[in-house]
Image (cartoon, rainbow, N blue to C red; front, side, top):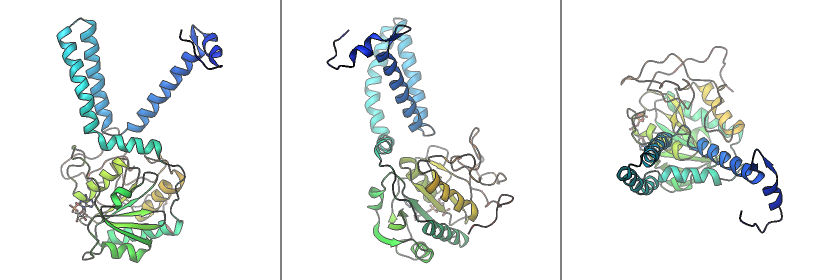
Length: 314
Ligand SMILES: Nc1ncnc2c1ncn2[C@@H]1O[C@H](COP(=O)(O)OP(=O)(O)OP(=O)(O)O)[C@@H](O)[C@H]1O
C-alpha cells in the first residue's frame, strides 16, 4: 500500500472490520453520501430519465465487454466519450442550477410577513380580474441574470404597485416580476421557457416561463392566469394546482418561512382541489404524483373550493 505522509494513516490502515480498513469504510460512506446527494439534486427533474438511459447504455457496454463482443464494446465506448460532451452541452442549464444549489449561501433574507401578505393579496386581485401575472420570489439561487433581462426597480411590495405593474396597458406588464426580500427588484423580465417535453405542452408561454424558471432555480413562481383567472405556484420545475386565496397564503408562508430549503412541499400542505375537470387534451396528474401539491403537474382546471374547515386568511 502507498505510504501516506499524514500521521493519522496508521489508524486508517491498521484498524480493520471484515477485512475493510477504516479508510475503506470512510471511502464507501463518502461515495454513498455523494451518490445520495447527487440523486437528491436530480430527483424529480428530467435528468432522472437521462441517468436511467446512461445506466442502460453502460449496462450494454459492460455486457458487450464481458461477452467479448469487441466491435460493439468499442463502438459503445467511443459513443460514450462523445456522449459525455453532448450531455454537458444539452444539460448546461441543469448543471448550472445544480452547481448554484450546491454553492448558494444559507440564510438569505426572506420576506417580511406583511410584504408576503400584500403579494398574495395582489395576485389574488389580479386573478379575480383575469389579469395575467408572473412573479418570481428569489430564495437561495440568485435571480440576477433574469432580473437583468428586464427593467431594474427598487420598490417595496404593495398591493397597488403589483397591480399597477401588471395592468393591461402598463409598460412593464409583459414578462415576469422578480421579488427579493420585501422588494420588487425587476419587472418585464424574460424567464427561460420550460422545454416542451410533453407534460406542459398544452400550456401557454406565461405558465411555461414560470415552470422553466422554477426548473433551473429554487425560486417560488406565482402565476395568475389571464385566461382562467386562476392562481398557481410553480416550484422545482413543476406546476401546482389551482389555489384559493387561503391556500396561496398558506403555501407561500410555508415555502418562504418554514421550509426555506424546500423544493417540494410537505404532504401536510393544503392541497389543491381533488375534483378538477380533466384537461382539454386529456391527461391530468401523472400516476404517482400526489395531486394537489406544487410538485404534481396538472392540466388547466377550474378554481377549487376551500378545503373544509379552512377560513379566509388574514
Ligand atoms: N419567456 C417569458 N418570460 C416571461 N414572461 C413571458 C415569457 N413568455 C411569455 N411571457 C408572458 O406571457 C404572456 C403570454 O401569455 P400566454 O397567454 O401565452 O400564456 P398562458 O400560459 O396561456 O397564460 P394565461 O393563462 O395568462 O393566458 C406574455 O404577454 C408575457 O407577458
